[in-house]
Image (cartoon, rainbow over all chains, first blue to last red; front, side):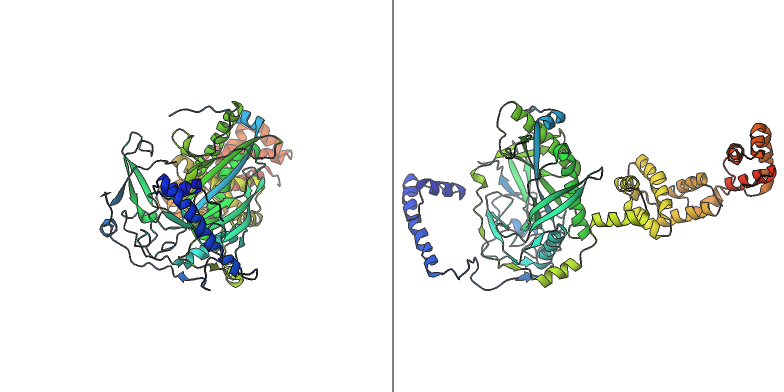
Length: 98
Length: 502
């Protein structure tokens, strides 16, 4: 069983800006451990001769030539913004939140 | 804002040994962004150089800019790095409005370039090797402007305005290994290192390298340890020190501040510091904490970059001569002493001298004019020497006129002033100002007679064979002719008159 305790979940929740109740933290600690264990079973299928990979498709060097394409107007860019000012996105002052 | 205690730099150096580290971000000057085809242009109207990729809209996919990868490999090669056979991108997760995706696409465990070095020459010629840990590809963030509040700084701001034009601009982050052994030269080395990186990326043509525009930005890490101790002290990281002078000052200030903290028996806080150019001090940013848990993981939307050895060698073949090697070659070609050459470099006229020599001047003539005349005039005008607008051809023409005896050196400087004042070519000015050397022997002989009569003792000495005494008579003649005579001809005539052979 993977060791994922309540504090780990609380830490992740804080990093992800997700508010969780004590109850949810307790439940998620148990569930996440099961999930991690399930994923871990993949390592049983792969032998030592299979190198670790982050990309299952055998592709590399998918590039774009350095040629300018389309852009939005400022109006388009800001069309979904909750608030704006002077053609810029307006956001609450975010200071060191740690 | 609290003023923190600092120790004098000298005292700090007596007690402690500084260890440095730098992260230099270089903005590439590609036409488009790292992962989108939106233009990479500085200074445009806010939020006009963006598309759905830069704004992190749902479902969009990044595509890597090939030119940016090539530029990154070139930077790696110029920093004597190994280029990874294969590398990948990673997501660096954090919430901050400068990054609309809530992650920055960067590289983490597989940088494109690693294990390099750069030899840095200090002002006295000492060479200091800085080891490069890695250079990796990533994207720039948007630009936040903090509004309201009393100071205009982030502290006390009411809200912020965000322009995403810069979001997604290709960056290469160059990270050094810990730099030990710099001692009291640490501030100077810091400045010289950043200057060298800037010079290299500019020389490669991969960045505009304008620090005032943020094309090259430096985060400076400083820690102190007592002399003789191997273990590093706790470091601070001063962010966005954006001029060469500021790099030097920031490192010096942090050394002095750390020393005072340690001296008081306190631990240095591991934290981000903000540099303030106005007071030349740093203030506390945020301490390292949970917020730095970036949960990097491989970017699933981008496939690996494989740099075949053929491709790397192709790129290596396009590299221009490294700036340091070029300096070495030019000094040897020109035959300048170390001191002469260093003065030329420090005065910022190496390129100008090279052009002047290419236009036909000798190395000594080019140096004489640039260092002896133009640098001083530029200083008075408070501009860079190159900005005065002196053309290499002008210097070649002036030197030729002097050589041909048409004008003397004193007149030549006058002609230079005329050229700078926009009065025309050197030939025009010589004519307009009536500056030709007097070569008609008649008036010269009169002046020589007068000079000899005025200094009969000297005349006797010369007659007696002391030819070197002729200088005094030549001086008298030059004075009488207000410097318009050809000194060499005057000398000839005096010796002739006195019946002495030189």
